[in-house]
Length: 238
Image 1 (cartoon, rainbow, N blue to C red):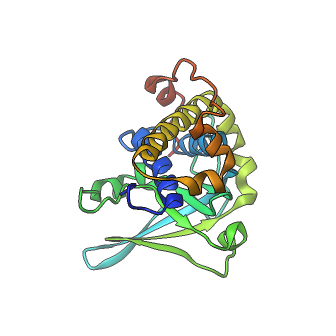
Image 2: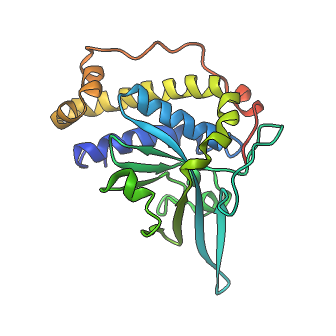
């Protein structure tokens, strides 16, 4: 699909595909840390990005009844427990691309359990928001998207971010190294894509990324990778 998508959409999907590949099969991987890695990846590639606390509500039918599953909290602020776990959830807002990316489906057991080759329910959600961050946070507008057989709805709470900072600090090494690894993998995928299709729009719209793709600038070198065991030992935020 990357061969036929518009250049900007292909860019986003390439980065999201790398994130999905990194965490989709790891249900105990810290979800907030994974979002932090994606935000760091985007920053390294030259895009403005931030984490926004959110509650993702999954609506579905079960035996003729409509049921809801919440990923994150909305009635009260999130907490970070002494063991490094949290009941909170965050999405990644990329202002440069005017898109909100939610990795929750990659790890949620309900969505992962329903995912098949024909119905990829466990893929990250990418929400284009033409009106930017202001529209994203506008409570008068519903952020809803269908993912059959589910319906996903979002609420956002940017003021809660300081409450999750201790968790991000706890996972700072994994976030930095994982974000750098994602950035390298994304750049490799985009470079391979540039061989088979013309991507001049990316160079024009995103000069920093263009410098990376052309070799005029390089990403920091990868240090020793943070192992899966080390990352998972640092705690799973559920």
